[in-house]
Image 1 (cartoon, one colour):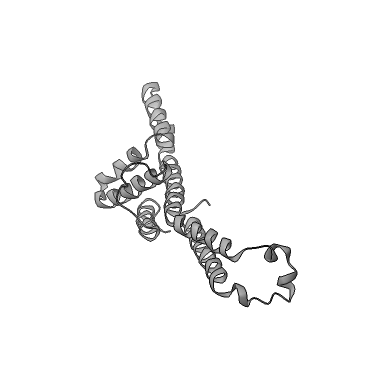
Image 2 (cartoon, helix red, strand yellow):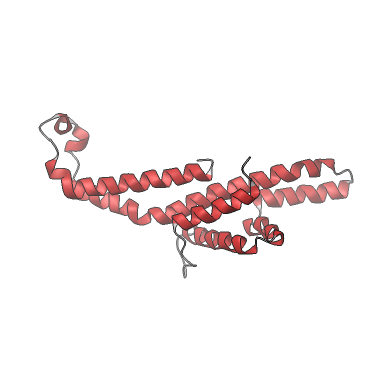
Length: 176
């Protein structure tokens, strides 16, 4: 997944498939036509519907947090790449060695440093509220990524995550 939309489609597909599996295992497993080709398929024949339903529930129960993590990770990579691509031409025009060195250090920080610091300059353009909403997603993603230790920050669901991150990307990459 390389785009926010790719990640969003992945989330929708996994959510739908896990719900489908849980419903099939819980409601219709006994009604499947086992005397036909499905009954001859060893993969299906050996499945335990209770275990299948439990597995689907495990996926569904963790999916929203995992989706926030994936959505934000793809978003972060996109923002870093875009900001760097936008400033590279300016850096390459610098002639003084000290300025060029400082600009290269800034590029390194943009590529690998604190993402909070990558977002911070956009507040000055009148987008402080949106940046705070994105930072709320960032804090929640970090909490999930680090094993959900400590008190959880404000919870953000995948729909709100996608909306907030999409709005920021529209600022960064206006539609052509």
